[in-house]
Image (tube, rainbow, N blue to C red; front, side, top):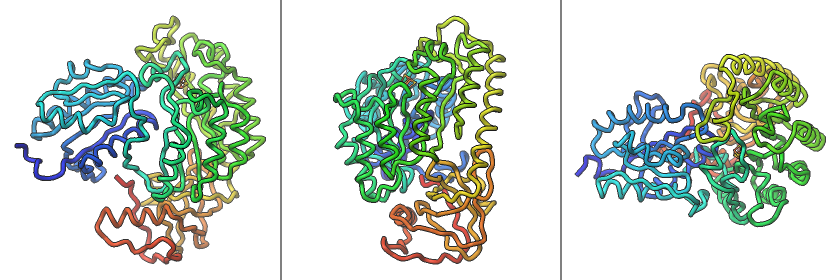
Length: 504
Ligand code: SF4
């Protein structure tokens, strides 16, 4: 009998990779909780946290050196496991889907390997591994249960993610997603809306719709305008204040979506749309079927319909065969596009992708040098765009964990409607908003990566259901009765700033 049988087993989920993986990890946590596991206590520092009975690593195959990082971590976990009888290690996600039994060959102390299509089986696989005393490997090639139908343990009470589709029908030559996540599968609009409603009933006021390519949503059930209709339908959900989505694909981006964004008040003035390259020749080699002119045309139409839209993007520098002239095209498009921010990546070989075996892989120093030029350009534009925000009044959804220096600067942080990060001061004597509340602040200063709103006047706070839900969650997690009931009026807080932490 192991030493932990008499208490609930604890778990920890470690996530690598994209937002899709972070969302999948919420599903994994939810499945484990539904099966009776409890989250391991964590102080937030690596050395002091309680060792979980089950460590789940949700892997990503998109990033460079993902396998080195995984096996490095598994090596460290091997010695921890030796000292913790009954501990189990599970590896899931994209790298597991790709490497399958290689993981168990290289790290035989792993108990469970599961793929991207069978996250819901994790508790059963852990149980089977314990019962049978041998590792379980289960990788399904296609989806059996849509991930969003699995239980979720959300990290935020105010915001939630909702998958509308998984997989991708495109074949971008640098991307491993199609071979790991499979063909696009769309969720029925009614199921998506029901999940959003459930999140809202739970206190959320913001949702982000997730899909590898949200613009092709509907392809599976034969409605080309399904995404725009879905956006409009979210506008009918009472209490849902903010709707965002990621990621759209420029090739499939249609004007009905722009109209839906502009005409649905709770769809936020923000768009993240990957450019990847400004060179049409490189876009062709990437097998991305739009060209730079089309991309810029979409931005023009979005800005015409939504004047304050903040537009962000992803760009890959140094794709095989990229010439200096191609790179200059990227700089030109970036200059014209005036992105609020850009996630820039240096191309590196991803085994299993068509681009990995292309001729003309560029030397690292060429890629690095172009990358630095692109960063310098985008940082200038970001700084200019942020400076243009000074004097504007914005609504900030107060968050936990957004401002790393909040404790020392005595500011709180959150996202404006356009998703810009805002740190705002809380003047002496002002009420203090809770995470999930919304404050109305005037931007007084800008920095390259954030905005500052300082004022001597008391904060203008709108207490929300999400703030109430945060209060309730706090009370439940520490056993203190909640002092707040939904519908209570504003309540002065006189003991200085609360310490805000990311809920786990
Ligand atoms: S659109 Fe391209 S980059 Fe995006 S997931 Fe599909 S194949 Fe990958």
